[in-house]
Image (cartoon, rainbow, N blue to C red; front, top):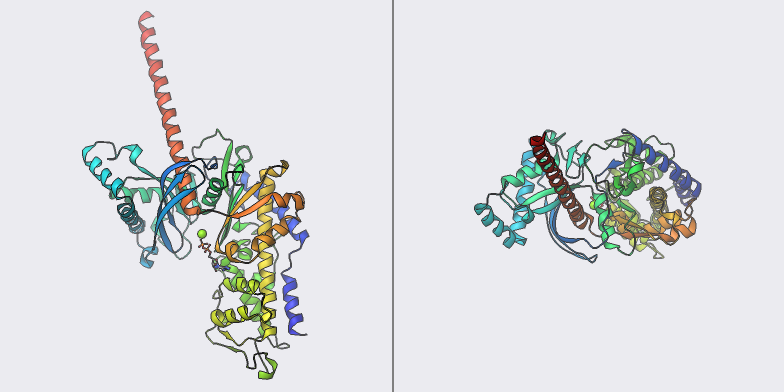
Length: 522
Ligand code: ADP
Ligand code: MG
């Protein structure tokens, strides 16, 4: 067997046909529905208590913070009300020792200090005024309510959300480990530390990054009726969409506004089909799962997102390199290598180390259209320490990487197609369907969106006409603008709740007046 044939045999295992896509979509819809009716399903379908998406006319100054894996970002966002915004932001790395602190207080105190520093630097006037007012006024927490910044808190760890600004930490991921915080309300933890510093800030909303993406894209795409889906294809993958309240059959524990009849649902689709009813399974998918920290979980994500594609590729490439019948990244002598040299792989090459191959190399492979694959060969040299790779070897590598990337994009289309079908918007032939996407994979992998579009056109119920109406656009800054927008929604809900409370109090007062008047006559 030639190298090209052997590579082709690997490529064939990653083929994900139109029929596979259609089977995937049907199963995705089934698992979405199951997730809406009960807890403990593969698609968690978490209700977010956000009951509307913006239309671009929203206005005001809000704060947003984002605790991701590595950095803490603080920003203020001025929404101009015409789909545009101005954003000021600062980013600091979270100190490693705080990721594994003894108490939650240590980490959240650090976060509050960053917020304070940001306010002093960028909103000095506002901040000073508040400090002065606080000293002269006797509002309950020292500030007049209307002068308090409402803040959206993007917290990219699994939480059980109980309300728009309330959610308890289920578990840490991404290298964080502070057992003390598990089961606690992360908004309350942050608010407590903010209050200790007397900052004029209220944690108004707990934000998932996909929900932020959905909101931000709705704000920025005003000519449609809001985005239908916000989706992330970065380190991980996930999506959020607007669902009809009547379709959410499981119990909603928190309070929410019922007037729109909708609620944003965070699908947590990374765990779609953990039971492997329809997901494709190659020997390398099995090997990756077995060596992962969470075997059997996040099975869809393990085939789609940036954290995993490099490792699937590595495992497939290593297998081919071990095949004694072919020479892959190996030369008999310089005569068999078009570079007139022999391929040399450093002992420390990431190709020999689990999880060490970054998915960026897939993008480089997919983007190299040069006749001699000079870009890919430079990439192999620079990032993988595979020196002087022969043309045929680079070509085989490119074919395998391309197959893994294409399967990821077609799997991405499964989730997007299912959500679009679920929203029912395809029924109106004049309506454009906006999908906001974010994440390095979808941003940088060449033609990732084109491959998604191609697969969408093959889905029954969408077809090429339907696919043309699905607009997949890079979303505006979700963790800044999206979080600010959710803070705005939350501030509206506070007002709504206050008005309702005032009305109720007035009704009670009126009732007691009546009874007072009535009593004497009795
Ligand atoms: P996060 O998901 O943490 O918000 P990103 O959206 O930047 O961050 O995604 C990071 C992931 O994207 C990593 O897994 C990385 O390997 C992958 N990635 C970064 N650049 C590229 C690229 N050019 N092509 C493919 N994958 C990439
Ligand atoms: Mg991100």
